[in-house]
Length: 450
Image (tube, rainbow, N blue to C red; front, top):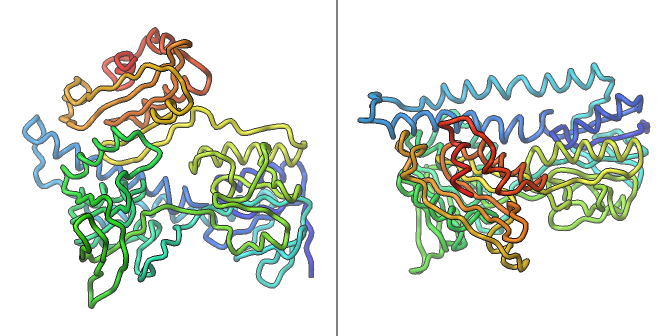
């Protein structure tokens, strides 16, 4: 039996739920479907639980840095099982809360993997659902690496649910997942290694600051191996044997756990997009400037599922969802603005960036001033014994506009928002210099970066 709706949303995360609620509030008949526990990546297996773990690691790191500088807590350590129990107080209530929210709003919720039958219908289990509009917000999954034994890799989701932390952990890939979790695991007492196939990890972040973060990682005992592609992973008794091709030939590493940190891709391969004439590309559903499918006007996409040009970030997904909702309800009129959106690697210290990278500004032929400095001896770093901190700010010569800002150090995940505002609304370096900041704070350092 076929059930009919006005709007059908695939995905219950930040890119999906807002569309369902907005359409329902307009009086439309709405359904939402997800094959995973309701709540999406950020709330259940991404940003939020990760930040709980990072917070504990930051507390330990702060305590250790300040030994002999007024803090005496030599036995401070992370109790991993207790930390996991605390983390679950955030994640466990989410699916039930989302389910109740949909029910109270009058949104029909379906559990199960779905696929399109044709341009106007999809199937969930034994049910066929039709709609006037579809919104794809299915999130992302770990990329397939094509190496022997990759089934032995632990996903980031599984890492976030470990009851016990293994003694030896190898992270395959030099992306943000590897670096963030490696910094947590190292502070929790594990022997940690990152193996990255390229010469430069954390693509998309400033190369000079990445080099400093790699140095900071090695200082806390993380073995960072670059230009070392992993070739195979095998399980031998109670350990994993990882073979890689290093600069000196084949290398073999052993670990208790190997974690996938080599990137994520849209989780849309089995949605039957061809049956609905939904064109896709590597980065997701091909969409126009209104986040509408270029080949099927009844379909929209947002977040990790859309090839929109936006970063794979929760705030971007939320913003795009609001735009999709408006465009479905009122006709295409809103376009996403991806300018000035900061992105952060939550390592210790964190790395943040917004706007253009130095190499991209050069490629565009822009004339700019580069302010770059190591800030390890600045007061804001010295008072907490933070040795690894730096910044790079790009200022256009003719207009005094902030083209890009890149920060490494304590609280840069907050300070970067000032630069994000400047890039997004066109504030100049003069505007930021003339701001009166609370002092002493990390944001007051902005004046000295300009």
